[in-house]
Image 1: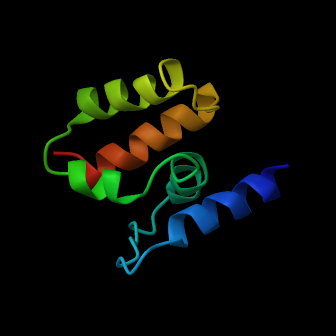
Image 2 (image 1 turned 180 degrees about the vertical axis):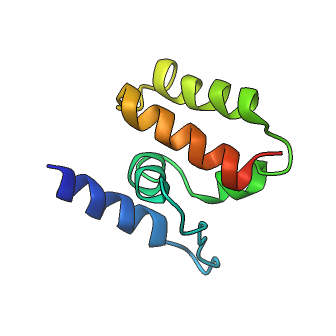
Length: 91
């Protein structure tokens, strides 16, 4: 099942209509971000918010994705994702 989700995330992240692909920093946590986040939206959401979100902002955003939008992210992955976003795309 994880392989299927990973493949879907890969295709969602690479599908584009003449758009430039988004490449995230290759650091610990990137796999969880790509697998979990690209399932629902483009990764440019991350790079586009990098200059305005600090830890509290990323925590709130990831929490919203889980609680309001229904993203199926477990608590362990949630913390890895938040840490990756703060360390690599935090203000």
